[in-house]
Length: 456
Ligand SMILES: Cc1cc2nc3c(=O)[nH]c(=O)nc-3n(C[C@H](O)[C@H](O)[C@H](O)COP(=O)(O)OP(=O)(O)OC[C@H]3O[C@@H](n4cnc5c(N)ncnc54)[C@H](O)[C@@H]3O)c2cc1C
Image (cartoon, rainbow, N blue to C red):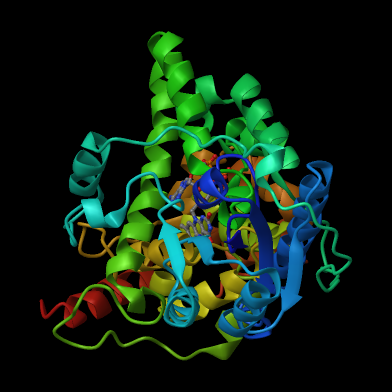
C-alpha cells in the first residue's frame, strides 16, 4: 500500500503524485494539518484551505475512499500512519516554500518516499539557475516540453476506508469563494466561455474588472494557489483552444498562457533562492534607506492615502481578500517608492489579507515592484495618477471601493492628488488629502534608489 500526502494540491484530477502512487498499489490519501505551518497562513486563506480539505474529503468519499486528516508534525504523523496501515511508501508533490521544504526533508529522512514536480509546468531543475529578466526565462521555459494532465485514479486504486476526522473549523471575516476542484473547474469553464479569447485586450480594463470580474481576468488565483486545480489542466485546455482559434482570439489565449509563465518564474526564483521571502534578491552596493513611518503604513493598509487608485486597491484587498493585478502593482509601488517603506512590510500584510496568497507570486512580485527583484529596469516607479488615467479613467473601479468619491466627477478623481486643498474639501470632504506629495515622493524614491545602486 502507498500513502499519498496532500499538501498545496487539494484536488484529485491532474494530481501527478497521486496518479503515480495509485498506479502500482492501492493508495491511502492523507492530509497532515501542521499547526506550526498553519500559523504562517493568513486567517482568510487558512479558512479557505480548510474548506478545501472538507471538499476533498467529500470527493474521496464519492469514490469509496476517504481522506484521513490528522493534526501534527508530518514526519511523526505519517510515520504512525505507515505503521498502522502497513504502507511501504509515502508519495507527495514537492513544494518549494522553505517551511514546506524543511518538512519534506524531515519526512524523507524518516520514511521511504517518492516525490515529483507537480507545482509547475517546467521543473526549475531543467532550466538555468539564474536569468537576468523575464524574457530570457520565458524563452527557455517556452522551449521545454510540458506534460499533459494526469488522469483521476480508478476507484479500485484507492484504499477503501472510512474516517470521521475532519479539519478544524475557522471563520473568516469576509465571504470566501466556494473551495475545491468542482468550483475551480466551474470558474475556469466560465472564463473559457466568457473571457479567454479577449483576455489580453481586457485584463487591464478596470471597468470590465468591476462589471465582469470573471471574464476580464480568470480570478482563478485562490484555486491555483491552493492547488485546487492543476496547472497542466489549465495549460492543456488553453493550448487546445489556441490551436483552433484565429486572429485576436489566438493572441489573447496566448497572453493567458504567457501570464502563467510569470508564476513559473516566481517558483523558479524561490526554488533557487529560498531567502526570496526575506532578503532582497538583487544585491545593492549600499543599503536602501527605507523609511519608518507607522502612520503612513497604517493609512496605506486602511486605503486612506488620498490616492484614489491606491485606496481602491487596498480596500478591495481588505474587503475581498483579492486584488486585481494592476492595482496590486500600484499599491506595492506606492508603498515602496512614494512612501519608501520596506517591501517586506507590504508583502507580509498581503500574506495576511489575501485568499490567493502564494509565497512565490507574492514575494516575487513585491520584489519586482520594489526594484529589488528581477526587473531589468533599475528603478521603476508607477505614477498612481497616470495609471488611473490610463486604466480607470471613468473611475468605475475607484468608486466601487471608495464610496466617499461617488459624487465626484471622474476627471477630478483621476487628478485628485494634484487638485488644490480647497477644491478637494469642496468635492469630497470625507475623503483624505494625499499623505505624500506626488512629485516629492517620486523624486525621493529616485534619489534613494540611486544612492543604493551607487549612482550618486
Ligand atoms: C505585489 C503583488 C503581489 C502579488 N501576490 C500574489 C499572490 O500572493 N498570489 C498570486 O497568485 N498572485 C499574486 N500576484 C500576481 C497577480 O496579481 C495575481 O496572480 C492575479 O492578479 C490573480 O488574478 P487572476 O487569477 O484573475 O489572474 P489572471 O490574470 O486570470 O491570471 C491567471 C493566473 O496566472 C498567474 N498570474 C497572472 N499574473 C501573474 C503575475 N503577474 N505574477 C505571477 N503569476 C501571475 C496566476 O496564477 C493567475 O491566477 C501578485 C502581484 C503583485 C504585483
